[in-house]
Length: 506
Image (cartoon, rainbow, N blue to C red; front, top):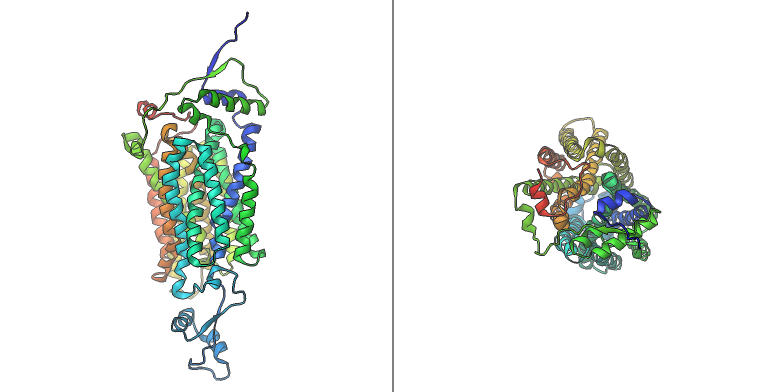
């Protein structure tokens, strides 16, 4: 009787033989990226949901009328500045009059003037939720599996989005935004890790960067949908329904075979790879077996990410990189109202400019490497923001306006930081071994969320000095770009599985 020859594979060997980015990975890639676009719609909808509508200071009979030919309400609207209007409103000497009282949360819950900070607070709470989600769900995914945490997080995300659309009070809305962030963190972390652990090394970087293009598409669609849909509640509800329909296809999602191997569940990992091979039209040999990974008996912790010099440098520099990229990306995205009078156009431009940036990222990341592209884009973004902020500061003392130049430089800054932000997802997943990959992604994501928490408030610095928000973003990003040169290059290298592998690496 003839015996089947036995051939041992690791995961990368299997992918090299049956397809590093075949039909199976393509189907999964499309599924995850549709959700990525929906995450953008919900996460950044605050730009329009929390927009301050044009309003009148009406019924102010006790105000001294400067031009007796005008009625009191018309007089105030004509000659008073925003600060004067707010002063009257705060003293209850006039009431707000808007065309659509339920168009935004500002109009519906009277978040004008001194109450307007609550809009920024609700978005900061969203990032606080992402911070706690990354801190809690990253290690949980390493413990119980990527697939389970992804599904739990997705259900929570869309449940919270629905709750926000039917909120009766600002407090309920703010709580919902927190849980949107909490669930969103788990979605994004596991989405990236599952995909990048099942795509071969030749396509991993390109696929990771290109994923961010779908987030950009979501941002572009957001501007169009907000322009067409009347009212923030209906808009949020539409996004929720899209997410629930998408979730109905969750049976497509496999567990990560790399994670299964580390947990000693070799047969389950092999079955997933056999399904992948069959769907790609390149069945795996009958005698194939997977090399048994070093089973992790001990429980790893966050402190392992600082346990020896090489991983310490990787951890600290990527923390700085994620903070700076998030701080600048969301600072520019959420501060679009300060760059142009037309919120819809400026927001759409901020989304459109990301697409060519990501295309350039895809075309250059495997040619020039992760480290050089990351450092270059952070430095370019920092310089653009610093120069733009300096011009904006000088512009207040000049007779001619340079608003167009400021807008172009800000778009260059967004273009560059988009590449850096997208690259960080790929680069970080390659820098950390499988044993602690989700912990590393979770910790660096926490740094990103701290940057995001601060971003909604960065525009408030403009009340003290025009241009200061862009200058601060520029300085932070420039410093981080220089630190990026300390990281090792990971282009074309296999993913490490254990900390010991990394410790023994040359």
